[in-house]
Image 1 (cartoon, one colour):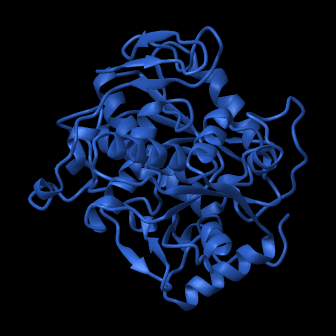
Image 2: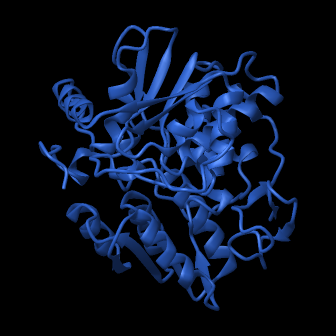
Image 3: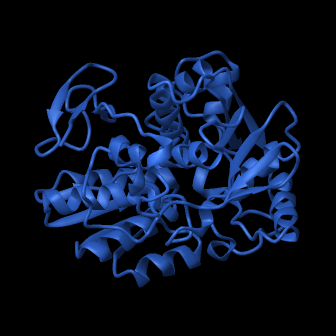
Length: 367
């Protein structure tokens, strides 16, 4: 296995014995891993899942898979296409990272796995732990969509419903993460998750014949898809497999938009004092203090991109608009279409990250 490295203080640790975050500065780990180049012509004969990009992945010869990845890319306008990541095994893009964490956990053989989530990441971890035969506990906010809670439980995971917001849920899980024999399958703190989500961009590169769109639009809460996309773009560019790097367009709900506020204020990270938030339909990106905030802001700026925000009315309208086009997507998953459906500054791809069955049609008011 590769080793962990801290992007803030430079500390390092073997994956096999590491704490779930840097013990010195408490930052999330990065992974000290250098991928090899992938030849486009070698791909047609490979396994039809994200594991086809084996040279770019930090784990090889997996025993855990549900056929995740290789989701369709569909044109919606002359300039904007959508990648249908809600067609994953657990109906969200989080399967890309969850399969990596489950494979890592299988090799480390912990007594139990724990995760925290607003719903989709927890569902994915629960499903892949079930596939692996690992005991799993998932912490979710008590107001998580009932269908997501049901899905997590259906996979056999133990559910911990936590009063309060998403941050309260994360704190509860982290308190349990230090218990002996526990593997914290954190989609935020564990960088193996990011090396799973980066396959989103590798698939775009393959499907577009060795190129990428001018802009990649991603929803941002904890930033796992954006940071994975940034990893892949950097790897493809470093290997000479793309000549131009696309801009990253990050989307947040206006009701919970700490990163957008910091970006437009020219800040390098979030202020010490938490920003005011309000209820939002986009529960999956309602993260008031993402631990990788500094990395997210840096990645968007380096790409020449920006942050956009969407209102609750725009989210509702976008969900209905996509449904009228034949695509039923959950309210968080329509945020990028709400923000960039009329994009005309070159080509762009938006992810449709979760199935509409997970939340149903967005209500007219948010409690």
